[in-house]
Image 1 (tube, rainbow over the protein chains, first blue to last red):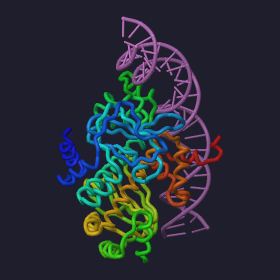
Image 2 (image 1 turned 90 degrees about the horizontal axis):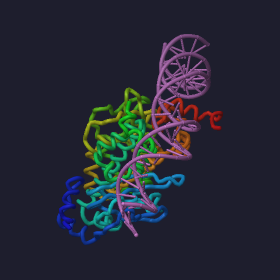
Image 3 (image 1 turned 45 degrees about the horizontal axis):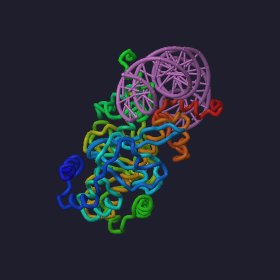
Image 4 (image 1 turned 135 degrees about the vertical axis):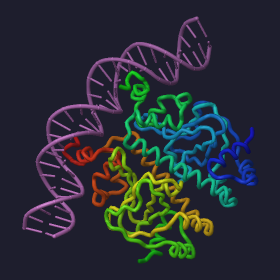
Length: 193
Length: 193
DNA sequence: GTATTGTTTTGACAAAAGTCAAACTAATGG
DNA sequence: CCATTAGTTTGACTTTTGTCAAAACAATAC
């Protein structure tokens, strides 16, 4: 497992990490594997773990009136966490589940905090991750605020072109704030008049 | 104008700032006033300014198919910026306008960067601001994803109980992702069956 | 290969919200 | 104080999406 390669990869995306910092990150974290369907965080739990996905994908979701609503998907080179619990040290409003058999680098809030204190490049890296996440949420809000179901779906495809091969449509629908049936109709070319 | 008092106040909310750091922040920034309706950032402009609101309020908005859609409101002790342009150094997708006559502390991205390098507490402060903004967006996304118009409005009132006294209903409606007419009907007790 | 389970599609109907137009009300500036 | 403008409400109608139920399809395990 070439973890350095992955860290260089995500360093390019956010902000590069020195070798020393990478090494310390590697010894402070561990590689874990999860099976499809495994739930690693449940509603009400405190979670201070984050998962950098090497292979596979995961989703965060919550239950509203008993219905499963997806909030966030994470694929290779992205970081998953129950962010509300992670940052605010409160019980998680979310569940976190792996959607495919996955390999991840698992690390804790404590690791982030101590590495941030020690390595300025790490602090900058995390700050960049958070900033980008914030801007991603902005964009998502934008697409959900006044777009019709079909436009929301097209926008999602423009970001993750083959998401439908990896994530069941039920989850994609709830992520877009629409029902499964509506998504199904949108995808059917006969209904696009 | 007691700027120290304000900085202490928002230090309490996010992360406290040392006196030395506060002083340098004060000399690096300036107090400005804006009239109701003044637009300080326009779509397409590069904006690397942020505004800490001392008195008054502002909104960020964008035009979709010629319609004015509000994205974000800011009141006393909150920070307004065209965040996409501010952080990514790209042309702003937003307009930023003051909704009331306002007094603000105006500072630039450069100031943030240089103070972040010099003062660890400032870097932490900014990181906290960004993190809280991110969590705020999460919550907003949550309320818009599967709630009906009425629920979205009630949720907004729970955060800003008297927002309707300060922000015109048109802006509140678009912020909630609904039309002005729908908001008007929701607010009319006769229509709540 | 068949049973079982999970996922997606389709149809008929209902609910929610949007659109357009007009009326009404409040605020502001001579 | 009146005229003008900005902001809000109301009504009639349309569009979009949701709901519930059933069928079709796909994946998986035995």
